Structures are given as C-alpha cells and as structure tokens.
Amino acid sequence: MRVAVLVVLAALLPVAAGAADQKPFKPHYVSQRAGLASLRQGPGYAYKILWVYRHKGYPFKESARFDIWRRVTAMDGTVGWMNGQLLSDERTVLVTGKGRAEIRKTAEPDAKVVGLADPDAILEVKACEPDYCRVDSGRVDGWIARDRIWGVDPGETFK
Image 1 (cartoon, rainbow, N blue to C red):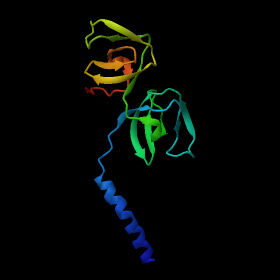
Image 2 (cartoon, rainbow, N blue to C red; image 1 turned 90 degrees about the vertical axis):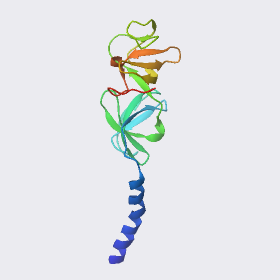
Image 3 (cartoon, rainbow, N blue to C red; image 1 turned 135 degrees about the vertical axis):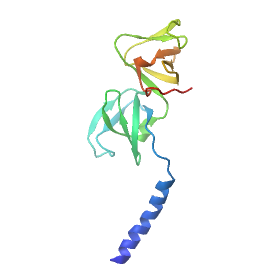
C-alpha cells in the first residue's frame, strides 16, 4: 500500500512544479473565431449546450481555463464554457443601447460624425481612452462613446 501512495505522489510532482511556474490568470476579453460556437454548462462535450452563438467576432469575457475549455461571460451575463479553438484574442466590442451610436472622427464629443452603428453591431476595437474607444467596422474607422459598447472594462485604456 505504501508503494502505491509514493507512486501517485511522484506522478503529481511534475504537475505541481509546472503549476508554480505559470502566471496567475487574468480575466480578459476574447472574441468568437468561428461562425458557430456552442456555450456549454461545463468544460466538456458531455455538458448541456446552453446557447449557440452564430456571429463571428462576438465578444466574451474569459474568466477561467480548464484544459482546452474557457469559461466565458457574454454581454447579457450568460456564463458557460466554450472550446478554446472557437475563441480568438482579437478584441471586439458589441454596440449597446437604443438607436444608432455615432462613430466620430476623433475622440471628442463635438467631432464630425463619420458613421453610425446599429445596436448589436460587432466592431473591432483598436484603442480606448477614458471616454471613447477607436473602432473599425471594415468600412468606418473612428471613435465611439464607451457607454455605447460592451467588451471593455470600466477605466481600461490601451493603444
């Protein structure tokens, strides 16, 4: 009996040593890589499908990892697990609110409007300042008010 316990403990040592070398996980935003992706109740194909997302680029907030699985949260608060191969590190945002959101030439409230984005539009995000984020729709490149998008944390800035 003592030999079996030692073998099991010895087998776990490389895993524990490897875990100590890993950086702590930091929640971050990702986007849907495929045109069709299933959100599951747990990290595996045996778990029930909660929702099927059909929009490439849809943003999610990744909060945990388990093997090839990623725990993500959608804009509406739905939490589940998605295969990591269906996700990309490309940052996108989802337009929120009622009515079209103005996309401006610069990050100023009185800047020229260069485009309009419908609610639920998915836009690539390139940079964020305190009040505006630079987005690209493929046809329009400009700045949108942060309070009209989901996919960026409050106070998060980047270039």
